[in-house]
Image (cartoon, rainbow over all chains, first blue to last red; front, top):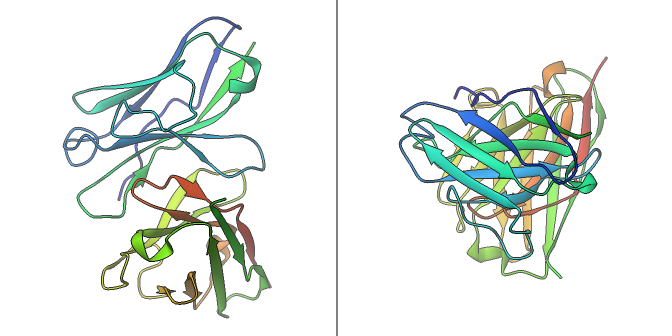
Length: 110
Length: 115
């Protein structure tokens, strides 16, 4: 199972919007609407932010949104806040119940 | 309150075995797919293994296939990961997680494989 491709870093100023991409193949991201996004603060467990491409679990601010086009999924964080600074990981169903993760993107709030 | 608590991590020599446990509380454990996911120091997340709600279906990452075994005891609300023939590259924080996609995660237990 090959990892999905994410940019290693992204940044934005408070109040701005930032988009993180996640590129896979037709066997994972492009083949299913089962892309998820996780937020991980240092030393903490991952937290589910988006599932099934663009759905938010209860309690996740609507500043977080997801989308997909072809083999690339995206996470957009609008109205950036200091607490959004974290690592973000995408994941996708890949034809077996075992999924595949992206390499992670470190989001810095300037 | 839904909670997953991992235990069993530690320092172990290459080639030895270790068994991780994940105790679930506040949720209907038997109704969910369960996962083990690991994170090597300074690295990203890696799926390790998955087990269906009744234990009849199991999947493993290629990197652990044949060495690790996932199991569950629904009567004890507990998930297990038996890790044999451990290698240095298995050094990581191991998380258990619930659901598909995983929406509840434990805090993790650290496994260090070193001589």
